[in-house]
Image (tube, rainbow, N blue to C red; front, side, top):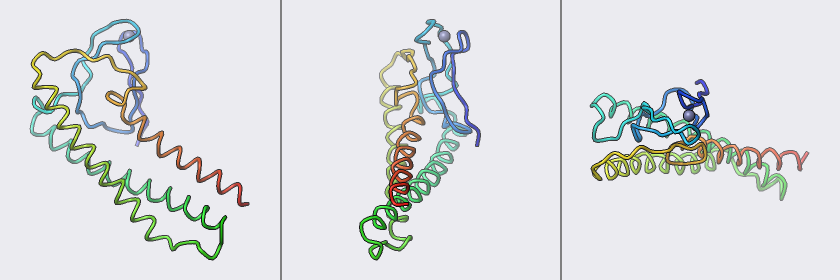
Amino acid sequence: MSYITESCPKCYSTYGMHFGPNSGLGPSTFVCSTCGETFQSGRREWLVMSRWSKLWYLFISVAYIIVIGFSAGAIFDDAARHVFAYSNPSTVPPSGPVFWTVAIFFGLATAVLQALRVRWSVQGSLGGDQVPVTPSFLSWKTNLTFFVVASLASVLIVAQMLGRMIR
Ligand SMILES: [Zn+2]
């Protein structure tokens, strides 16, 4: 998977990021907050997506569910071991239950979020006029990847700090 930044085609100011291919769902027209340029975002709202694009969205959603579920499971499992080892080494839980509980929880949360994104897209599209959206790096509406990565990274950092405290 490659890390890709999204930027304005005219002034190159960065407004987003993603890893590898993105889902393709979102407002089709963006307005740059820096230079005011209007450009195609490469995304489409659900109701005007082709059948193949919708299938792609389902496929990439399953990939998100697996990647986010397993990452979160591994990170929380690691963190839990550090916390229990710190309080009382004899209470360290076996690896399986924590991993699978967290993985399933995050997997389900991702599935719900991807379904809600379709719902929000449909509701927005039904409004009639497609108003161009101003994308921002710190907006979950146009740069959701950043918030998912940031929350997983913060748990990872806390787990690492707990690990250092114990050593
Ligand atoms: Zn620009």
